[in-house]
Image (cartoon, rainbow, N blue to C red; front, top):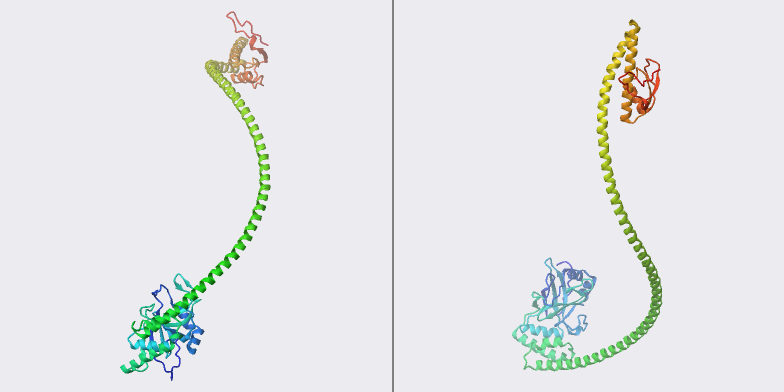
Length: 453
């Protein structure tokens, strides 16, 4: 036996037959647009409620679905579920006993007349996106139907005992008697319609069922009218309650609006005061900025004038610099010429000093006449020195008051003229102080103007 399958004890029970086969398909959407998936069926067959219901025979089915999925009017029952399970391919299988109730007898008669019934699940629960919620689904069993929600949900019916033609006729009569005796007990219009469709329109049974349907429909209409009136009364009552609540809410809103208006007025006054203060301060700042802008414009005009003056000064300065640079260049040329003259004099002076030094070595071997010649040479040397010093001082603008001897070199004279009197390293005769500004060169008549000590 498959897992989660429970078999009821039907021994010694006079049932009319057994329905067995596929009851549902968990892998597809049924003809009603619902998905009853594997988790739903696994939850049903694994539950304690299912085991208890199978053991106690609680899963009774009707001929066609009742109006309510949780209908408990079991006097209209015709089958009882005794087994159920789901296989590995998602096919739900079931086994159902056809009971010898008035409706069960009618079903048996219809089967004997060639009617083939399908099977369809009944239960209640939530639906999300056309899918049954496994957590809220409550299983109530299966019902016999003409057009099952699953195409393959047409279980095989097996009779308990084969019927002969005579028995079939006898069963049909029993069905007629059952309908006649129990017709008033049937209150389900759907069941009556299913039964009526199995009889010919001219038959007594068809007419009786039609009359019963009209009675039920009139009762249904009266019940519907009563329900409509009750619904309208409830709607009116709810409207009054809602109107009262809305009136209270409106009054609260009015009070809130008044309070908000007062608070808004106060806030508006404060904002206006702050705005006026800020506006006044901004006006003053704007006036100050206008004055500052005027001052900046005046300063800009003054700066423009100064720029023009500076431009003129710059032009004059550039012209002066040009003249000064030209004067420097001319003076430099003059200095170069004088340096050339001085260089020539330095050469002559060096030759003379060399001759004097040579004469000094031979003084001791000469007589007084030679000494006088030496002294004359010394005087001539000093004349050259004086002439050179005056010329160099004039060219360089140095100090003309220097002290020289016959041993004073050209470098010594340059140093003394440039930086003042300096200590000489060589002394041949007694030194003397001369003023080059008062010096006069020797005339053709002799050494006129030379002062020696």
